[in-house]
Amino acid sequence: METYSGSMQDPQLLRYSRQILLPEIDIAGQERLLGASVMILGLGGLGSAAGMYLTAAGLGHLVLVDFDRVDTANLQRQIAHGTKDIGRLKVESAAERLRALNPDCRITTIDGRLDGGDLAETVARTHAVVDASDNFPTRFALNQACYETKTPLVSGAAMGFAGQVCVFKPGQADSPCYACLYNDHDAAADTCTESGVIAPLVGIIGSVQALETIKLLTATGVPLLGRLLRLDALTMTWTSARIAKDPRCRVCGGPEPVSA
Ligand SMILES: [Zn+2]
Image 1 (cartoon, rainbow, N blue to C red):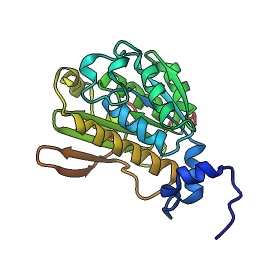
Image 2: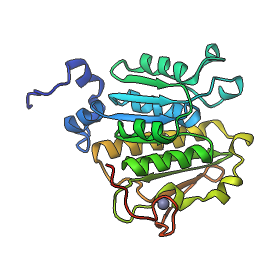
Image 3: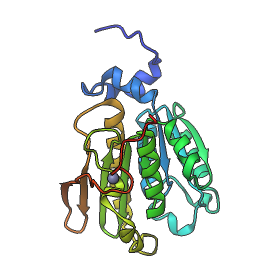
Image 4: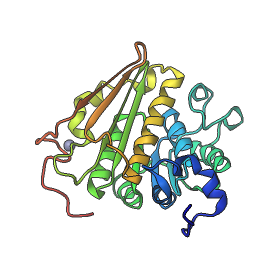
């Protein structure tokens, strides 16, 4: 057996052993995870699941962004928060839960609405972004920031019994963006916050987002790039369809941005 001479300590080698055992991840992949920074926008149902799996898997740094506070009606599916957290800021409640889960993961919290330059600046300091928000204006703003800073975006949504995930990698030739998929007309029809959602669905979709993020960070497998993965939980049917880049897209349709 080879002697390990990297930066991980024995407890970490043990803690992440079931991932290090995977030839696709190995020591190198685990070290990449421990050195990576990811932003999660939205600490609701999707963000709870994605955040908990990324933290447990040994991500080095998480930036949690949410302006909202924990409400009783959140607890049915937002498993990073507990009954005692009602009324607390979601980022504080989630940070406490995640720190208890794995102290290796450094957590930064931003309790507010980020937009424009602030959002792009925060996104630029991360290696990937998990969109776990619940509304179109936020999703469009996040897509814009990821496009400008060429940051990979792992987008997820869940409503009723239906969920979807898609990964966008701005800067890659022919890569579509979130705005190629949806326009302002779709956004006007959004009723996400008023409709119900079945609890485990957000866990499934958030977990797929965490897995796709780990794959991106460790360059493992084939990412869900430009493919829209959909789940109909009522029939438990998964489908996936390629998304074409829209040459007239208001975000990515013009010339490439110069900032990296
Ligand atoms: Zn686009």
